[in-house]
Length: 624
Ligand SMILES: Nc1ncnc2c1ncn2[C@@H]1O[C@H](COP(=O)(O)OP(=O)(O)OP(=O)(O)O)[C@@H](O)[C@H]1O
Image 1 (cartoon, rainbow, N blue to C red):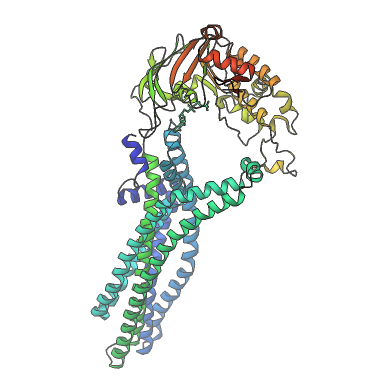
Image 2: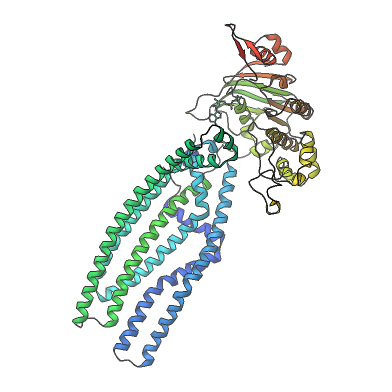
């Protein structure tokens, strides 16, 4: 695992200040006007409580002191205006904040998935810790940048209110000022510590929540519904889901409890300070040391400072937590390429002589066993190379290396002698077409399911139909309620499809497989065609048809065919037998059957369907 991966999996990226700056930069880029308006509104709302307190004091002192109407009218009008502002500012702020949130969320989401697309390999997607981080980053991309901005501005507003009130309070009673501060500072520190604990707890329970999601998805998924019902494992899965939820709840409850105890204690301290302050004010007023206005100012200042301190503590805590979450977003967005990228890629001309695997060793990580152990293999240009071997022999892994989803741990994959690590990975993939063993079934229209093979020709309906014909699925698709425009899903019915679910269509496994083949055919004229179990789900007639079609499609092209059905690979120009990550036999069908090795044994076994082992017991082989 390289240091970039460590960075992608470890603690949130960047310092607190860097993350704050990035959150503001994101908001400023997404909605500069809304951000400016939000800053201005924050300052205004921070000044309003102090302005109210001062204007009240001046008005009351004027009235009690018998001042002329004109003298008290000015602060009175000011007070009314402040009241109007107090009524309007929250509504406008809410509107501006929502706009800012939407725009920042949109840009955050865009940048996150741009970054995810830059991961050209598969390693990170198969790393559970990185997946946890990605999930947190997804949550963070839509809300936490904004929460960090709001929290920071909210903290600034609270700090502004505190400073203004403290100044006012200091003029009336310096001792009380110190007391109010002394009660507020521990609250601030405690809230900070609590937010740190909460963020750590959320990170810790990430895997628990992911497992819970896995079980709940299973319980609600159409793919699992058959087995869940037939095997009667619904209650078992539900219990597992609840165990995970209970574990997450326990962790959350512990933090909640700590919060409530700490906050109650600190709240009590604050109440004692303000109660004491009020008693002193009553005593001072009765002794003639304070005016009526002074008392209202004092009460407003004590309540204002404490309220603003609580607010500050919460905002700082919220910002802290948002920044920690935002750190996961920053880590994903800035974590760089997952596979080494050469500064100046070599050009990748059309394949002329073939692809070579030279002493390729591979394991998925240092903690995993070797999957490929010194594979030397030549895939000649214009020919079909078939890879066969028992389950787990390493066939699909070898294909992943050909597409550069991973780099070999040792050794090299050479394209006409050029190491594929030295070329642009997108250029390499443009030269490859594939049907993977675990092909995708997209909940989109039939036409889109095929045209995704080459989005540059998305609207080429003629080519879509011709690809479908070659895969033997045209008649079925043309007969669908809306032909090629039928959505192949019962999950996402578009508005126009809401006709009692009639137009959302579910295909059979074999039909989906033909569609995947059509997608590969749509991606025409590629130098290398990879077919990993292209006919596993087909009936005998369909398999024959498809293999005839595939044979035509493969003609003159370089192809790699993986199949457990040895009848399907016997026509390949070259058959390679993999066993435990090593090439143990190579040759064409005739040479290999004559050789009497593993291929010959497996072929004979599969041809008969049944074989006899050394002890004379009958054994069934079926496919490999
Ligand atoms: N993402 C992964 N992480 C860790 N190990 C993996 C991963 N994918 C495959 N393996 C392991 O690598 C080995 C080879 O798997 P691979 O899928 O290449 O075999 P295969 O020959 O294609 O098997 P099959 O015929 O069953 O499709 C297996 O032991 C498998 O457990």
